[in-house]
Amino acid sequence: MQLFPATQRMATQWKNGGGITWPVAEAPGKDREFGWRLSLADVAQAGPFSVFPGISRLMGILEGRLLLEVQGYPVALLRPDGPAHAFPGDVPAFGTPQGKMVRDVNLMFDPDCFTATLEYEEAGLERLPGTALHLVLALAPLTLNGASLARLDAALLPAGTALSARGGPCWLATLKRRDKSLKP
Image 1 (spheres, rainbow, N blue to C red):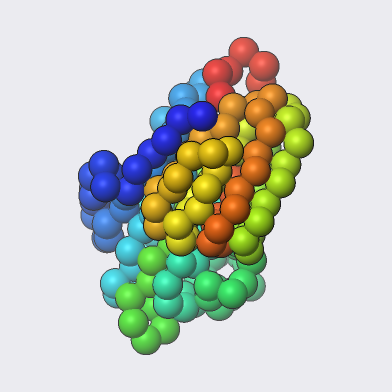
Image 2 (cartoon, rainbow, N blue to C red):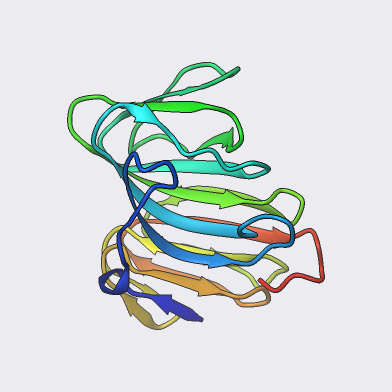
């Protein structure tokens, strides 16, 4: 298991300069800038999202509510109690915070290399060993396979590892390699 403490994250500008993101973890791909990447982002004001050609996105909300407009798709209102929202990263998208600032979690991946899900999980989580790797983002202190995670810490469990979490809620990213030549 690889740990990614929240205290060690470095804030960076969005690719388009419109906001701030905190990369959590990523893996290389083949023809794009990454195979997958999990990050947190703050949306303080209305504006366009960065475009990522050939990338699929899954977005969950940690704080606030976000009106998301993606070209060619119905407008969606995203909130903490809702599921992750899937949309293509290569079409224009525009986010408008509803009220206060929004903090979100983004799982971006190259669909030629990986399949992925992003799910909000309440306290208590079990997964048997399988062919997928799991990335857990703690929303409150929790114990994951015996390791203690603080709020917003993350951990990557490689494929073939069982997962057992106790404590607060979390976001669970599950990734399966399509291309067997890639490392997780």
